[in-house]
Length: 273
Image (cartoon, rainbow, N blue to C red; front, top):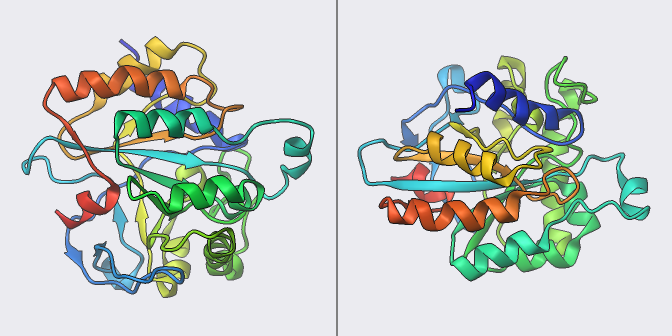
């Protein structure tokens, strides 16, 4: 059995190049302003204490065996040269697997990723099986000391999020969700305060898949299957270079979770339930 420390470490390693880590849920559902690119008003959480950006970690444990698979489509603002040299920050095989298995999913996309792969961003964003959410434009940290990531200045945090929504619109994503995942999963009160005017709900998770830099798909699959509970949010990645096993993991865990009675949903359904 893989320990929690190893689970967290595996996910957080991706922060230096790409990834994310956990937080405290706020379960009170209420209205919030849609994000800049949203044309509808999907469910969001009410503002947190002091009107701060609310944080969602998992859904109800008692309203059915639902689980949300989420995938971070990571690319930092300074990785263009690596992409030009042939590094793959996308994973079309993973998206094809989700479609073949008919698994709804939420893709937390950076604006830089959408710029690099506009056709894929548009295809994901227009497929009703998926929803696109915001993972910042730059994938730079919103706190100091976040796994070696460069830091977004406080007065640029909201602009970084809004720049990502602009990149989604330019790529042809019609209705990006008002959900935001902090790069590296790192946030503090200042970051929550700075993003309050953006009207987003911050989305973390309660299951670390461990797919970051993993080479053993079976080990990652076990970690997911051991961690999932009713209402879980699983964090995975949509980046071939940094998470090469994820497609195989999905093909293994989806039928097993369905056999256990789980139903796959998007984050929006968990928040709204």
